[in-house]
Image (cartoon, rainbow, N blue to C red; front, side, top):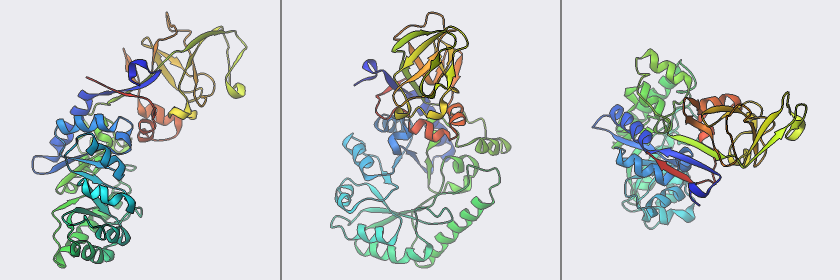
Length: 380
């Protein structure tokens, strides 16, 4: 199904993605590789669509979480280097190696599993190091054994990397400094045993903007590729450093259509739980989108949509597959009209940050969960 025949769809601005990639291309500089992270369907924007735009705009690498994502990119004709961040099931290792995906060894067990595959010779592996996030990653003491297992099987240790725990949620970066120092120590420890890894990398979007010393040989741009700041704290920190006006442009517009309009008399209720009661004669529009589509139930009686350039509030509870809005103040509203759930129309806009604040979450979750079963349309 394409966007023209769908009731709900996502528009992805190629110009915005290209602009944002160019921003990070400039931050990375000519001597470092730039990775566009397109995991989780490119943060909801459409993995294949964004991959092509990003590579055309100056990205050198792509980052995914699963081997399935990497293989889908290969099947889609992508030949650029692809790093798989997450674990790869043993049953998928052979195909992943055959496709030339860069795999992450984040534990001795993962390293041994990769090393045991018949197609491992010449494979390029990246080691994930634990520096304080205590999520995925090896302790420094586990690295020598993992390296021996991989290199003895013919694999190449191409990269070593880590991820920051608290670089986005605060303007006080003492913990990030500790992680940076620990990563430098790991590199020194590896050199001491004769292992000089060609591609160390630590920079996510926030680190790329705030800390040039994290850039190393590869910059990983994630949320920034989609025109969103990692957090308001990142923006505040960037402002203090004179780096806040880097010109990111949000790339997603989430649209649906009015499928029914009805009149509700004053005093009548709308939706489950009767949480909204009309105080006037109300023109109600029904939208075919709900929390099953990622339109969070926390937006009930709180969010605003845009119809014909006019803001129209959500009334009643967001349902699994439907949401109701008040279009009483929208001149000429009719069934079939486009409704902007996220994005801009005319002089009005609804941002991912607006919806995140109402839903009690972060902008990442708003866009990544948006309409997973709906088509993506690339627009200028």
